Image (cartoon, rainbow, N blue to C red; front, side, top):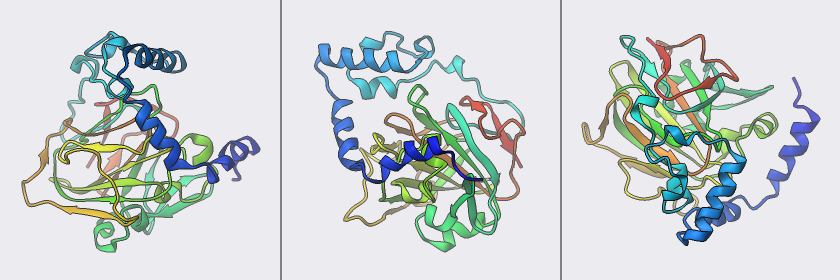
Length: 285
């Protein structure tokens, strides 16, 4: 199935745009603290995006010190109750489902005839990708209006993290439909966990305007060095996060890919186009 002409025309400019330059400017703009200017920025932002401030711990949008603090705002816990089914995995973010399927011989379906390599997505190490060769994946898209913190689907112990340099293509539907291997080409952070249900990987994919990815265990912004993969190993028990605990956050919107072994089954409601909320039932062994 070919992408539409509209999607193609919208996606093509991203091949030539200076992704990192634009994202650097947005990074700086999102941290402007001058009260009149940052209030104007937040006013424009909320006029363009239907943000539900009644769900935020701090409901006054102008009380945030800058735009970045605003769109990484905390939510009231009662607004996102966690599913209580035994052994259930929960959605790690607010957003929508881009895809949720089986991984077939190390290939992941992207959209409309496009697929990409699991090994490439996870940073090129075949041994780390091997447990997921015929596993499951769920690609979850966060729009600019969504909550931008990322939580754990299940309790896990961190074993390895790889920050992988790359492009910063938009991850909106029109670019995903057109640009081959987009998620394995964009800058991303792959986090590998051990859980009681086997290994799990969570891939935080950067996008244009989203060149700053943070995790709760790594101090400050994670970056790639000398255009090469930046790898971190963790000792047993050094970083263990509970189910539902925050594990990281984005600036603006982007995509999280949850990767599990074949023993996990996604809920029937986790299908392309479905709106999701943090804490809802994602699946279980």
